[in-house]
Length: 407
Image 1 (cartoon, one colour):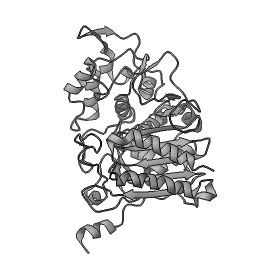
Image 2 (cartoon, one colour; image 1 turned 30 degrees about the vertical axis):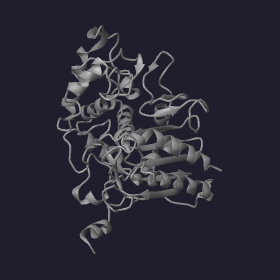
Image 3 (cartoon, one colour; image 1 turned 30 degrees about the horizontal axis):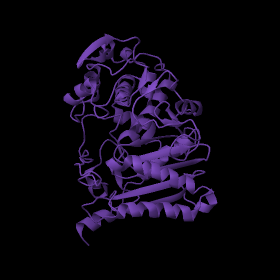
Image 4 (cartoon, rainbow, N blue to C red; image 1 turned 120 degrees about the vertical axis):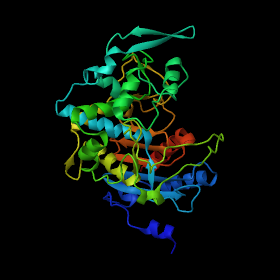
């Protein structure tokens, strides 16, 4: 037995599994679920992605949990149920739930200005482009905690465009993993907003600022707080801001170059412990770990007797928080959809170019991960892969295939 094989067979830290049942007992078609897996195996054979996992659960039980392809393109290990993934922005729902647990304790109100807790935001301006120059204008109102949760803060991401404000982000150290959360928040606060707070939905570093707010209010690091309030109670033993060296054989990796356009793919090392604990995209996790979080959400805030967040608080989070006056920028919020407090939400049965139910809530990660909760169907689904360039295609594909399997 080789050392690599021995390591592969070493017992992994135990995340308690959710119960499993035959798909047909949960109102799921086994043949159609198999067809779904076969579709993704064909995609893997075509070189779309190295490998993937798919889980579909209904009524509190897993009806389908399949692994396909390879864990990493440069190794022979197959994708496994316990493979570890960078979940990037699927960190955001976890941090958003964390924020709401503090709100439930009365530490702040959603319409509190973030500057009340992070004073650097008190002097922010909005950057308005004028003949190639950036004019700085005063805020009409301050950024609130609700703005941060629903991405109407005016904060942006450096990769969502090439406007003058985004270029300032690109030229800064905002992407560094060697600065802490306080330094990151101060850096974001030092740059102008892309729009007036409340006027536009712009996907952004807002959730990273919420991570810093958690640290200020709780007196703990973000990682310690999440572990105490969410991860440990849910027994999500393999979700953290990095993976230990003993798990090096379990890491899912992307192709070195995007199979569709040839661009270099460079993701952070999961074995490297970062200084920053990014509330917007820093966690690594497994399919089963995230399934426990998803089942808690589907249950209305509770799992195995552990109450993480209140039922009405969670309903509030999964409600539409964008009124008609908010201009939605970008394509992450699809037609027939809106945004709540930390989740995308479906508001129309039709309009969207993929299947679903009104009231479902969800989010994804730029590395190729995706999950959604469908209260109407008492269902959740998780798709995990490390294929950044194919993420829009795969999350649309998996939605259609899962809903086609419902009896």
